[in-house]
Length: 113
Image (cartoon, rainbow, N blue to C red; front, top):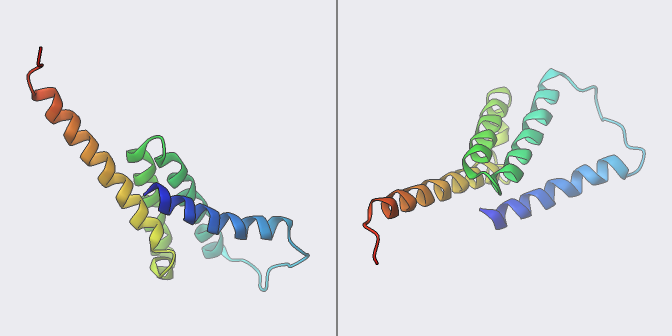
């Protein structure tokens, strides 16, 4: 999940950097409310991937909720390669679940010594 999230963040970071510091390229059309919602949910989902590095559950849920809202507004959010974002969030949640189950199992085992 961490490797995929790095690749996703680098990919989107490149486009954000190019947009902010690139040439004088304005929008090809006026942005509507759906565009702003889509951009906001994408930024929130990327922030969720960053948060998932420290807090896997919170970041994974944040990313999935943002992607779900984005999908309601525009179903194309779930097309490839953007579909890697919720898959990565699901991997963070799976990692959290496995770690939590292992810790619970270790807590139930009697201490050796």
